[in-house]
Image (tube, rainbow, N blue to C red; front, side, top):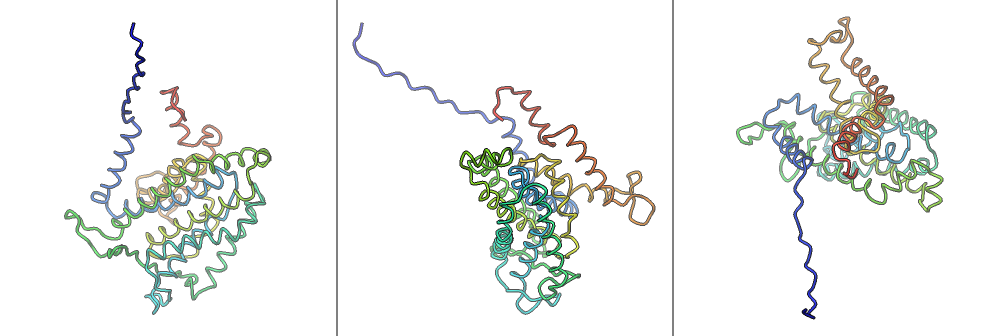
Length: 369
């Protein structure tokens, strides 16, 4: 018998094979990158609108879904982002609407507009850190009324009722306007160019939010949502976390406002009202509270529905153009996602993504959630 000790063999390392979700993510990314080569302007603008809505929905889901803080003032921070971009990037000598700006590079204007929205949230954060539930919701409604008053009356900055033009984004010498650029013999206008900018912003925002939710801050936020007193007992600074998440949510809203302004090419005060805030709450309830993917799915549902109803109103029963005796597409969409909220609350408490998650767990009982 040999007295030579042999070292135990090292365990064999095996490469993990990509699962179906990885393949689906890669295929989905390639599909999104290819869409501008095949879709017309209507569908691209609808998709951009959904991307902007998804960015804003991720922000309010961090606040309401993950931390349990109800905010009715999300539209205010979208307006701050949209109008701040116009002021920062506007021509110093005045544009076609006669309104002047600071003439800053547009990429810098995007960053500053997002920070200004976060700063506005920071000014309100001491209140957000101490109020909760319906009390915070009522307090944030005041932001909507303040914002509407400023937007309608600060005409030198906002253009008043008529709004103001939005300077096109310019990055690395490429201007995201309607001047056509041929790519593989496909004319690329503003919608095609903005499509890729929107994808980058949405992907970056989603990955950052996912990292927050999966890390220590996310666990603290969930603890505050589920039981704030117990969270405070174990050492979580409840007020500081609430205030910080409110600022982060405001920055997401500001970035969404910038993208919306670039898509619409004009900002008007009427758009940033209480109805918009309610739509964002509907997005996260329908998609799934506390979930990044739920925010994206809910945003796509709520933002695309009225546009699809408008486009296909002639083929749908009871839906017709305003003033023709039927239900206007905008009203029909509100009825439908109102019914969707009721259905989700009663039958799908985890939202639309919760259904997919439960099915995945049933197929793979050992899979970590």
